[in-house]
Length: 215
Image (cartoon, rainbow, N blue to C red; front, top):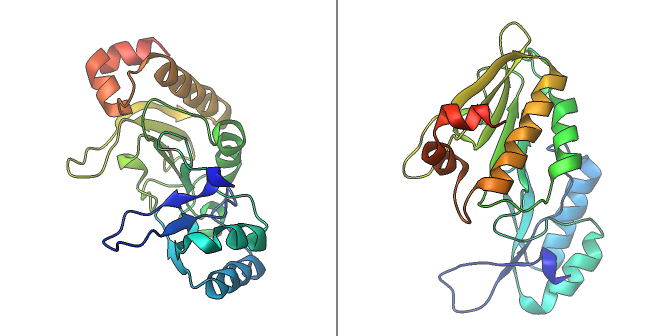
């Protein structure tokens, strides 16, 4: 159970904890929403909707942790600073702006890479158009659909106090080529970056052209 429980950093002197159900998709049924809300209410928790497209129960008292986990009866997001759990996708097929149905490649990435350990905290976003409502340009890895229905990949984006758009790694790709290149980026970064080195810092250290040539 401990691997799912995250201790909150708060101004309060009393310890509070967070548990996040893991649906591995931004889409959730009304029944599951209601169930999560009922569990939060039972244990005096608060619901938080994060930019990672997850719904967390926060403000949990330590004595209630076991009850929350048991009552939820869902898989939960594992804690770990450098575990890959922040993978987001737009509404894709449900949006009139969609240029390519990206839910498929999103699920492939989630099923193969979710929870792996990387050198540093890593965020991935996948968008079905260049408008990128999921802010793919400022994520460590972005996959986006161009106006022609082809995909392109950006790497090294970051937000925070020093935001930067990612470098365009490759464009005019089909889904198979996109997934293969994405996998190469993850493997190369995982094997060669220093501990705690963000993808952008790694790319800038080795040089973007050198980074590309090693994929």
